[in-house]
Image (tube, rainbow, N blue to C red; front, side, top):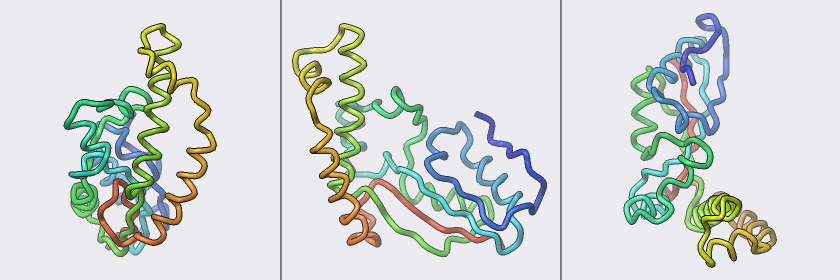
Length: 176
């Protein structure tokens, strides 16, 4: 994926970057290009999962090597950020943070991990390489559980939006 945006300098008042940074080789270059296409006073609205955030579920799985590459293998996450790294990347691009909220607290992390682990189990089952447990999970009717967990996760994120004990970050940045 190229980080260069095909737009003129100062062309936009607002740019949305939602679930993108974790997929690009050079997120610093992408954010510099976002800053380039923003007008003075323009805003960047950013959401990024921070799977490198210490003590979060995906971080623990990564460190323990249990389902540690689920998102890389399934959907191409090649970066594992911390909250601090995301904020520093934007600041390095000349963008000033004006608002931060956090998402994917404990219930959200469990939901996220369950969904991706089940997809991974399904792939293994389809290729004939699944263990009995992976086959069982791949074929288990978990949609009601996931729907319930996603609803609880929504309320959890609303309630704890300012608590950084979360895997995702939502932030608004302004170009000076």
